[in-house]
Picture (cartoon, rainbow, N blue to C red):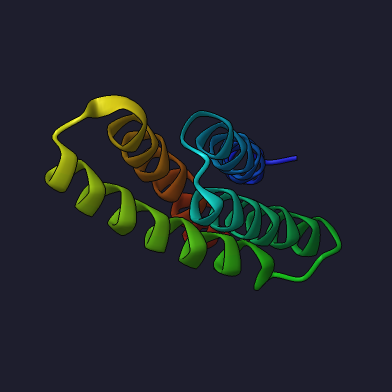
Length: 106
């Protein structure tokens, strides 16, 4: 398993945990729904990649890019590092690792 795949899997799990935590702490159904959906999409992309579908990691990279934009906008609005700043930074690292793997394969 490549580091890009591992990073996407970990980021997907963190997205789901973050959505659940957002629901528990702030009773935010939007946080729960978006965290679960984005986390499942990331894990789906990882599973596709592991099954030999080269576009699986591209799906995960697109979902990660959208999440990075969302978390950066939320950070700019709230000026609170937790959780949006942390997730934005982790998302950028994950995106770089995935794009590195995508480019290396071609």
